[in-house]
Amino acid sequence: MVVSYTQEHVYRHPWHRVTAAAWRKFTDPAARAASGALSHILDVHTLSRDVDARSGRLCAMRAIAGRTPPLPFLLRGVAGGAGGDVVVLCVERTDVDAPARDMRVASRNATLRGLVDVQERCSYEPHPARPDEWTLFRQETTIRCAPLAAVAAKVAELVERRCAERFTQNADRGKEVVERICEDLAAEQDSLTH
Image 1 (cartoon, one colour):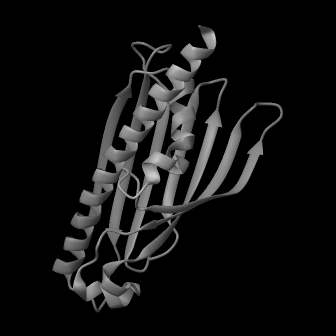
Image 2 (tube, rainbow, N blue to C red):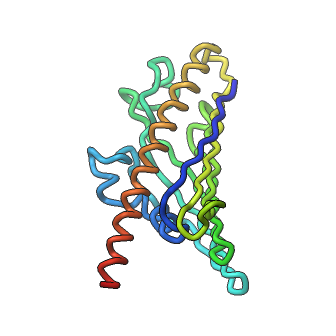
């Protein structure tokens, strides 16, 4: 079984501000604090960053380590986490075409794929109705539980649903963090112009 969903969100901020905030989302100290919206994120490392001199396009790869949602008891031993606390490593590829005002992010878990494979694709582009003022964010996520002999179909379905619920909650928290960082960037810009 596969669980898939698509979300859209309109940021009432221009594309350049939203994409700057999205870059800062996982490294923002307030978001990663123990009570923060992204407290499940443990570490972020940039693996590569390349800029095409002719087109101005940026391509970056990051590794993101985070805690999984609590796993059902039957899967804890398979995943290797004591007490259900398991760390997952994800790889994120970001392509930015600044002249076209287009940013695409694709991520996938690099570990635990023997249990659950999560793929996410996001896009940030100017909103068609107000391209200089708002940004349209789209997110497509697919979660697939691997068919394991040791995992019954009902447990696999439970894992997929639980992952989808947690992923949706984390995505909502991530959007809140981007919104807050956008407000901070707007205030910063206002203080520089006044």
